[in-house]
View 1 (tube, helix red, strand yellow):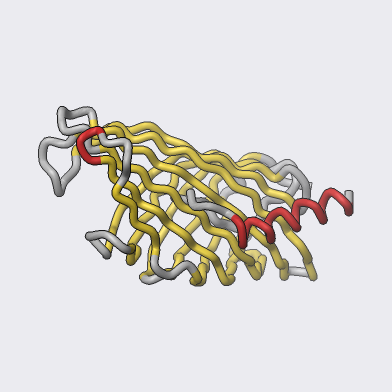
View 2 (view 1 turned 180 degrees about the horizontal axis):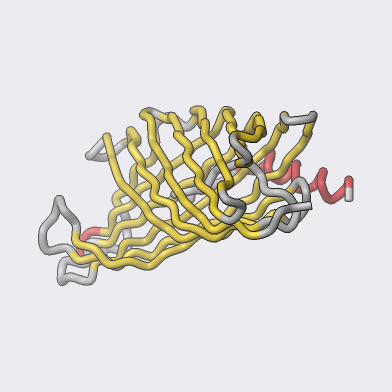
Length: 231
């Protein structure tokens, strides 16, 4: 078990330096062994991109997600969604969005109510333009880093707060008029910080909120059905 834990830890650290981007990740404190969450999350993004215009980009992504505490120290997550929408800035473009992602968080050390964890999450979003313009878009992102977690109980509800440094990369690609060669932009600053909170109320419901700072403050807000009491 110690060898397996070391391998997972090394993979997370390695991902910090070698990952190519993917976007719309779920960050939270780790779950206990046997716990699971099924829910919905909405994420706001705001990044400075280069080298092509526009240099400042904003976008939003909503997905359904599942998280599972595979061991006392390991939490796995997946997310995805399919949606249809019209582009507000470009009338006439009609998109079908496909979003898919996943991640892992490993609790590396715990002392009483304090814990130290590493995390790696990725996601990819493909917006397929169904109009005659064929103006497809693709966003990819990755976020990986370390978390200092403090657990406590507030009015009989379990809660965690956390903060930590993060490596945050986002790539945006546009394929105009069905082109196979994209117009590509990548985030200009990849290092930032994230902080958030996670709470379980009435034993079966969970709320999570966190903010990522990389170029700008970017919020993520989710709610979930919480299953299991952990071991």
